[in-house]
Length: 97
Image (cartoon, rainbow, N blue to C red; front, top):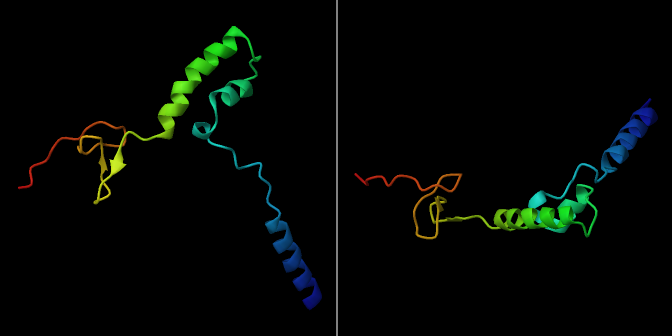
């Protein structure tokens, strides 16, 4: 009985350690525009492929760098120092009183 239990536990641990990479996809922001368009199945060198790359290139670049930074209080602020919400819009300035 003890041997069966230890064997079952060992087999379960071995199977749990064999995890594939099929569930771990690269995010779109980390892919190049040509990789995204090739993934759609568009033939390389066609006008449609060139249009796809031209469309995807600004999207990939704009997603890689956020339009804000975090200040010392972990609030999102833009380049001028104003607080912004999650969409990048400036928030109303509140009175300190």
